[in-house]
Length: 193
View 1 (cartoon, rainbow, N blue to C red):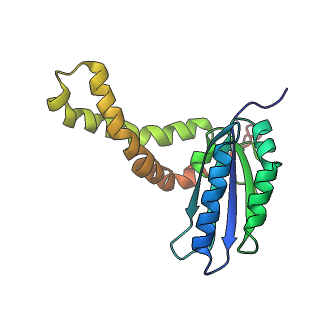
View 2: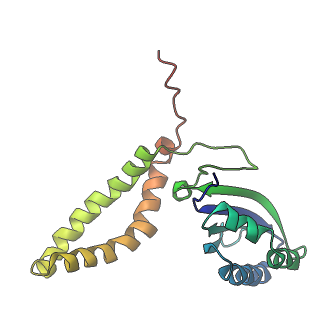
């Protein structure tokens, strides 16, 4: 049976100094080509630091078959070849599931040493810890304004305010603070002292 889970590909590329503007234009062109491809779900690029030569790309397809069709396409081959010698690939990972939010591969094929994926219960706790107090605070502060509103509108306002705060501030902070615990190796349940 074929795997129908979405697949996220993470690629690290090292860009030749002085070619970052060209590389950014090249990356944008690749996104535009992929956007029209069946099964394409999205992509993005991020530079490690403003003065870094390392760039990370992530792109996602609906399933392994769609990804394979894109990877083997003439359009992608042309696009990759058009980069010339301005960059080289330093790492490629394929991920399924939500583990990508926690910076480690889930089901993966990796060309670098494998690291620990936190169990789902740890992932849930790392989301709950910032979400509960933030939600409580937002409800407390917004209640004077939304107390007489219908519940769906009040919840909608809360979700619209909290989602970006959780995504861009509190989840990254939570996973960074909890990283030693999240990344701790799992104990073998068969070996008890």
